[in-house]
Structure formats: C-alpha cells, structure tokens
Amino acid sequence: MLLSPSSLPSGFSPVSAGIGELVDANAEALAVAAKAGVVPAQCRPTADADLNKRLDTDNAAVLAARSADATLSNLVVALARNIDADIAERTGGCATTRTTITEGSRAGAVITAEHRKLTPPQLVGARPGRLGRLGRLDISQMLALRTDTTTTLPDGTTSRSVSFAAYAAARTPGPSERNRYTVAVTVAGDPTPFTKPFPEVSEPMSDTAFLELFSKALAAAGQT
Image (cartoon, rainbow, N blue to C red; front, side, top):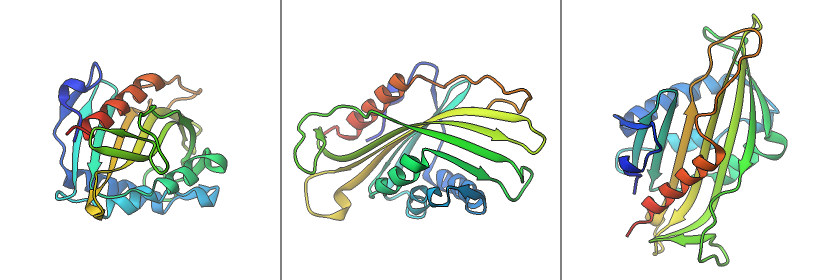
C-alpha cells in the first residue's frame, strides 16, 4: 500500500526507516512541543500525538526518502486519524500560529507557522459520505496543507523552511474497524541556517508536485 521507490520524485532516494524509529522520533519532537507555548492556545496540534501512541509494526508501514535538501515520508496506517482535529488546528483562526520554545538549547525561540490549505486531488465515484474511490479504497476525507515556517532566536537571527502534509481517511469494504486506513504523505524542506537579515528559502517542491505525489500515494494504497 506504499509508494514504490520508482514513484518517488526526481532527486529523492529511499532511506532505511522503520515504524519503531518513526515513533521514537515523533515522540521526541512531540515532547518538546507539549511544553511549548502556542498562540492561539486552541491551535495546539493533537492529531499527531494521538496517532503516534497507537502506531506499531502490526498496523503501520512507512516509506522514507531523502533528497539533497528535503525528507519525504509515506505512511499507511490501519487506523483512523483525527483529520477533523487537523482541520481545526491548522486552518481558519489557526492558519497562523506562534509557538514559543520554553526548554532546551533553543529556549526563547519563536516559531511562526503559516498553514495554507491546498486543493486535494479530484476523485471519481463520489456519493454521500464518500469523496471517491481508488481501487479497493473508499476515500471519505482528505486534507492537504503547505506550511511556511519561520523560527526566530532570542538574538534576532532567523531560519525558514517549507513543508507539506496530506492525509486521507479511507476504508475497504466491510464493517470492521480494521478496514479503516489513514494514508499520509509529508515532505519537509531542510531549514535554512540561522542568519540576520531574513534568509531566503527554497521550497522542496511545488504545490502542484506535492499534490501529484499525494495522488500517487493514494493510488498505491488502493491497488487491488
């Protein structure tokens, strides 16, 4: 249900990654984020933490890749992600957030994240409760986002990065909760060095290229 290495964008090559490594890396980042101050307060992300606690080698698989200046991951989980929480915490009044790091070597740093919704792929076979069908998967919900991030240290130097994330809620025929899946694709550009004045930043790929990648990931997950 994952992208094949040959489907990766030009410049990306697969790298070794396991679910255990992913869970540990996510947990470390989430622990730091949990102690940070977020404004607006209601925009503190929750969906990543909720899903990460439930991931294991029996219900998830991941493909990771790396380019010269970005990382990519394609995750398929036999669990439902709370995409409604993602929408609430990254759009509308939460489209721009300011997070202040309170501990560690970067205490006092302020991270400004600007989220922008992208138009997800168009699917065929829409009906009430279903956006469309891809192979064996009924897709009921999708969210695609671009995030432009600026991190400012107490000394005034800044670093910038661009990342993308997309999620789809899907299911195969049958009543069991085990038939529910989450397909996720993320691409994160490497942050620039901290400099003053404001640094220029290059996106890891275009919005269009990311949406094409998400479409490929959905098609791979739905293969019969």
